[in-house]
Length: 398
Ligand SMILES: *Cc1c(COP(=O)(O)O)cnc(C)c1O
Image 1 (tube, helix red, strand yellow):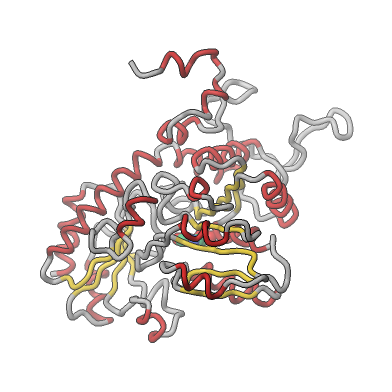
Image 2: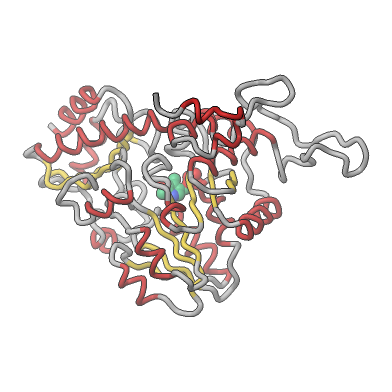
């Protein structure tokens, strides 16, 4: 029977954890029963400060901006499920990104994707451009565009794959190879795929970021961000920024996210299965013009998706034939089981209309150039019974 005996040999649980498979790391990675009473789940240490026996005489915790046991348990879990060595938890995904950008100096340049999450684009252009950082936005699914924007001032490549809402796939390893030995960090926003599907650090990236608000926490009840790295010097700098700028998350939210991660693998399997079924249903539906989902063999980056992702995820977008702005809005309004809402990655299915919601601030021409037409509808497929989801789509599309 497998090598269970070998795994448990020596009773060294911590050591054994390094060898766990992903589906065990979500539950046990970086976790040990609480020292005080043996609580199996890390208690919510709702405290700002810690008693000292003599000045400096403490048990590793002084003040909760710097360290908190509940947050630390979550940070260890982040590191474990992303195959990194250091994890950091922030008050939101954008707070995590903000910390990465603070690694840079005025004059430094960043290359990013041209169909970036809107909030990331806003952070880059409306906040950090004013601090002297320069951003280039290029279509990253072809690395030649990155090459053209590279220069000696480039310090960071920031990418997101699959992209929102067009489901473009960027070849993480190709980007890493392109800047190898160049002293340029590659950071990957892994929110859409989740750690279950894709592990950028294993492909050579330097930094992984998550809006843990989405799949990691998974229940639409918390806003939280994550960073994971595997380099000690980089970890030290991020840790310094996290403490010095102070955009941390609280113990309650840390607890909720940790609880969410324990079922990440099980949820993701169902998210992926349901999305695959819905993608195929939509593709065969004569009322549908286009379906964007990386699992289709005719998706332009299907081969890369197949190699760098374990599965194709729970997100997809589609365009209804002949639908205009108003018609698309009618469809999302008619949906009953899919909730019309921003966000994604929760157990419940959500629908969005990018042209009027997430991408409304982008001028129509620019939007349509990247495929975000008025009739585009985005789905975050939840883990309900897929027959009910299809029935809901059927009645809404009409
Ligand atoms: C939601 C999201 C973010 C921002 O995260 P918050 O937790 O909302 O701050 C960043 N990137 C992607 C891809 C997202 O979906």
